[in-house]
Image 1: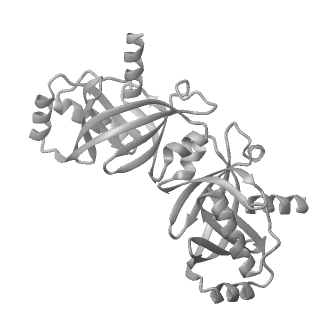
Image 2: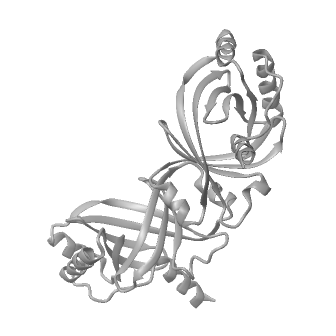
Image 3: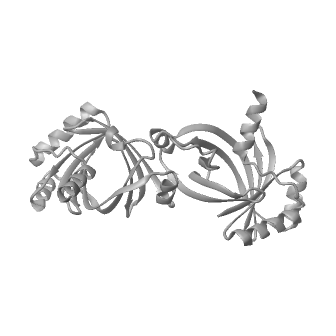
Amino acid sequence: MEIEIKARIDDMNKIIEKIEKLHAEFIGEEEHEDYYFTHPCRDFKENDESLRVRFSKSGTYLTYKGKRVSREIKTREEIEVKVDGNILELLEKLSFKLYKKIKKFRKIYRYGDLEICIDNVESLGNFIEIEGIGEKEIYEKKVLDLAQKIGISEFENKTYLELMEDKNHERD
Amino acid sequence: MEIEIKARIDDMNKIIEKIEKLHAEFIGEEEHEDYYFTHPCRDFKENDESLRVRFSKSGTYLTYKGKRVSREIKTREEIEVKVDGNILELLEKLSFKLYKKIKKFRKIYRYGDLEICIDNVESLGNFIEIEGIGEKEIYEKKVLDLAQKIGISEFENKTYLELMEDKNHERD
């Protein structure tokens, strides 16, 4: 289970300052190109699932995410597989259709066994994500405690994919 | 494009002797556990396609094979992706169903840019496969020439998966 909270941030430097004061360890920076796919015969959106191919300097990953168990603190099953080869063409052959691309820059920090990500998402803005993987009850508490320490109280419960859809609808 | 011929062999040692006389280079031995899947909403069999996860000591591979263009010399599109992670669980989440497992021992030889495989397939017996990847016309000729040199004239145009299905029907 992946347990995660996300929040919009206005002042990225202020947040980073707070994280560094907590002595979170800076892990590195990554650029992600995320390709989201529709299923050939199932409505991922209706079932609150997703299938993503992530291209990053650390490799290419195929990731399935299951239904959110809770929405405030996003808790959902995640299965990630590292892939080497033409996964886009293979998915296309199986009738998965490319639905959306999302590009972002991510700064990654580690705090205990939690991960803090500071994301600049193309056309959506800046966000912080705090994430843990494990037992729901334990990690919900851990994630919330850390959010409080950083001073985050208003969470964004939509995924980047949903926020991008909202943005596109506004434009229409 | 993958261009391939397959033939049953009665006397494995005799065939290996012939291959060695041609100075084909012995590459190695592998044990394959091949898992074949059905598509969530398309009949792979009807479309002459397949999706396979291969476990071998050199790694785990997800492979899509397209419709055979010709049947005598099996010519079909192949897309192979190396994977690291729980690909079986991920496929299951996407509603691909495990259909059949096929286990085999393979001796691999290289002859120019062709691959010769001597397979012992669990419950099917011994086979030789000669395979090239590239331009259809060129490799069909190359593959046939090598088959002639080895003394193979009767080809098996079914896949191991089809042969396994035939065997199971016999049993029923």
